[in-house]
Image (cartoon, rainbow, N blue to C red; front, side):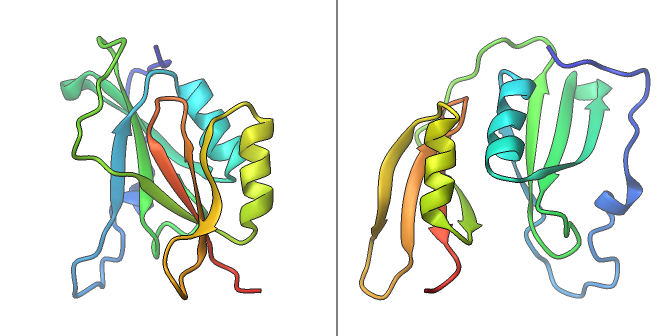
Length: 152
């Protein structure tokens, strides 16, 4: 169970997300996790994300953590949430995957495997002209698509 504080210490900048924006945009995707420590090891230590904020939502009896690559005003975030009274979760069959662009797919796949996580699909091109992609599973079994973003 995650540590909780008496009050949430929200970073108000994370809840603004472009107060001058005139069009809708994707802000974040949320997944429920069983073990924050293990999830942070996967997303932060292995994939290089940073914890941008941590908060408790007393009314939902949950703790959330926003992760990103540093520029939260211009990119979508990943929210990891852990319910205080739930030990296990089930996956629905409608969820597909989380996609993360990486500059060096081969080294990222190696880092994931070296850290003890499952790489389910080795790097390959899925369609002519497309980038190299690979798939891995996070500690909760969610599929993570890794897409080579730097062209050779």
